[in-house]
Length: 326
Image (cartoon, rainbow, N blue to C red):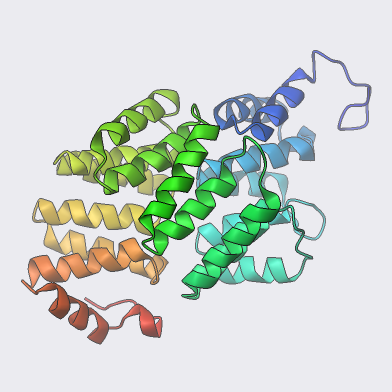
């Protein structure tokens, strides 16, 4: 047996590789991250085989731990021209707001019909351009051509597409399909729990989020779901604190928007609008970011919903690609 570095492979010595890669393939990202991350810290990036890098990167992105994904790319000296990691990197760029880089990376490579990551990156790029229906069609195409048994990503991605178009019954169906296929996946539990929390199904939502927190409390998606649960329970100070902890690792429009809502509840109005504007500066087409700013207008300027939306449009709406200015 030959080791990834070309030497003679010792079964016990390289058992971690098979274990970590197989865990990532089976969507068991808790185990994949634990096994592969520990080995990376022991041997260093120069002795870490590319198949292990790919599996670890897949797991980081799957659980939305984007900060560590970027740290990993920097550690290995990622070069998109010399590796097959580019589909995952394109998705990483897309979901963290580096839309132009993601678009350029996709256009510089042939799109294969079996790459879930490429299709999702294309969908996120379309969303960033305001093409939500086109984004959903891309996700449908991905779902129909790349679906894998036991793989949660296609179901979650399609559910997210329906969710963004406010097609909640369709979104629920695919969220629950993802959960049915992956009942012990903390990221899936957190995502489904977040959706159910928003839709008012509090019993199942809280059960899923708490279970996810027991399995993988460090996952960003789990921490966000916990923050949403705190908000729903009226624990606004704790919600702000949780959002601050998450944002320390990786800011996102969703986190900053939730933080803005919680700050409004405790009457920290200046901080609330600053958080909403920061969310819009990250992605001015983000639905949570836009709603957070409109909520600020309704709360602080005592505007009705139509007047708040009109005021928002006049201060620079997503229609012109400009975030509002105070």
